[in-house]
Length: 176
Image (cartoon, rainbow, N blue to C red):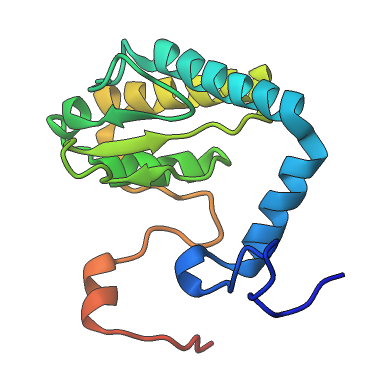
């Protein structure tokens, strides 16, 4: 039933790197088939609800440059926090201390100190509430003790790297 030719009318053609990674395409296909039409619509709605919920909870502590039109992700600007000496990078690193994956930072480029928040559709309300609690705690720490955030992460196995040194002295091999 399956073969490598792209000359068949039902074929999607050759898969090149331009079109994506084969393993990811298979995962996406299985996800779509597993959920079906109704499941995809439901997951999409949940992802949009999750993003809007977080945006609404964070809007008093963080600048939200695009208030309207939120779908599954939204952008937070850390420009207010940067005025206090703490960058988006510092906030992202601080999230690691609380067990959260750091968001994409400095994208989009037209938003100063941008942090792209993208909760997945499978996150529970408890996890979303914990994320809000942590983001608000980080903001409180910025107001009270900004060095605590600037030095993060401190609880992870690898703490803050000296990025300037790492860029100047490239070392791609671990040595004990």
